[in-house]
Image 1 (cartoon, rainbow, N blue to C red):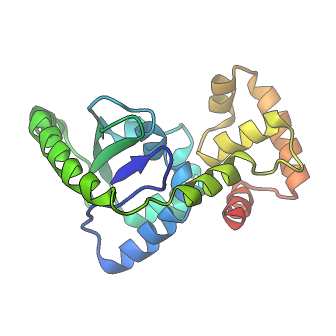
Image 2 (image 1 turned 90 degrees about the vertical axis):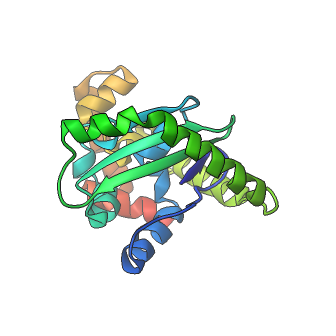
Length: 216
């Protein structure tokens, strides 16, 4: 998968069956990718790196509606990600997932031992893909609209601070994690959370997620 700072992600190849791909990929590419921790990591990554997905997620990610609606339904038990920054705006990501059980230490070490080969193969694939993709205009306008929708979600009702907290909650952060990110007290986060829920007319994370999806 290729993640771009100024365009929606592109799927170069996948091995999902048709039903899962339709449910997950099509809906994911329509906008919810903005909540994906892997997307957030990819657009910040410029050097080649490998990481385990479970080590990069916010502390309450598995309780988030994004996880329930998208990640959980892929039925992946574990995931190793290889990220390769290709230029200033794009990062190529190879997702090596497992459905039935988590990776053990020796398996992770084997993958790490062939990182150089993996990254060189990814560079070759990207050069071929990018040359072809340059002939077709990427959907910059769509990505810009989706990003603006996320950045401005609730702007007619919420303060700037409440919108910051809303964005972190949507991405799976707990009140404590939000407090660390914004360098404020957890109690202050809870006050803001109660206020923003009241202003939006909702009572749960599920309703917050649903409201955001409707805005896309």
